[in-house]
Image 1: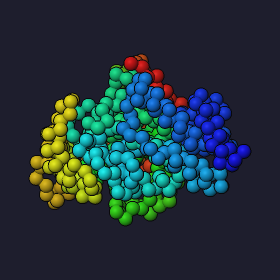
Image 2: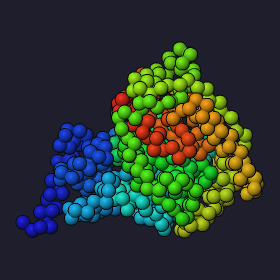
Image 3: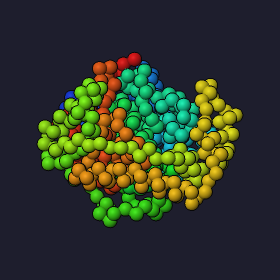
Image 4: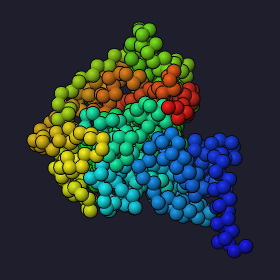
Length: 500
């Protein structure tokens, strides 16, 4: 048989066999971890092309049809060709690293210099694709990852209008929660969270300014890592404010999130942030061990120590605390006071006015070239839903002053960082773990500090529940280790049932 024909037949056979949605060990392909996928590829039991084909079929069946999750705003027409190229590299003995041949999804505010749009979900941004990959995308491609497509989001990363539905964009429509279709997927990285939960890709990249990774991770039952602001480059990402903006991993396991973080880190001359020298080349999987909770001191909300009402309201969180204690962590009840910093909305508006024009100046062939153009476009093209744009209007109207902008953020970040630093020092804590109803969900992003959202199970209706681990600035490695210890002890990640 001709060699080329034999190769084509082999690939076809793989695709046909994999259409039954399982691999050699009987697990569903769409829910394999990165390590499991890599092992299948090393054994010759799976190819990147076959995996991409399987995931594309699943997206067609569940995202665009069936329950209609609508997490994917656009698929990469080059994904299969890229997969074939990476398969050929593997056949010659060249494996770039743990993400070689691994499909992933990017939030649609992250630039890719290919056939796909980068629109932040806005019809105003449809036109010529970005001329250059975002820095983190360059890193991911170099690591051998396959960009499967872009995910839907709350338009403009949820900074279009205060009443905008979570997971809705003018370009992408409404993303749905794969666990309970009638419930919110949260935002703004709605599609990134829902897609990973639904098995459309093992990995996705979200972005966060204030809650936009951890909230969709929580309600979609996946792991969401919001890094310290500045750990990952923001170059080539549609901005809100560089004081808070960061991309971050979303995955089904802590190790997968750590592998994705490893691939995205690097020093970007276009986004210089002063980082500790010790972070250069740091392997965020190095501390991931089953006994990583042993002897660690974790703070938790005092209300769960003294109030039966708190435990009844979130029994999954109470159970999570018991799991951590059984894993030999020392649990310390604490009180965390939200400083409720003033003028946050003004500071965010000033951030959009300051940073969005710089981003738009690097894009060509779009319907807009300025924030004022964007506001005017939305007025003339409101869409059938008729959603407003109060946040964008406020940003356009705000009087920007660089000195005031810097002073506002200096105050906001100092106030919130002080709360975290104080509670960590006063109780000699390694980290704090919070239920999603606690004020730390606001404090952590405003401080620019890292956090990891972890699944804790599901409530009576089947909606995922979760716990937030957070700690000091640049503490991603230790936070991931703590989250990994909990994950290995709890096995609490829910599988979506696609219920109405």
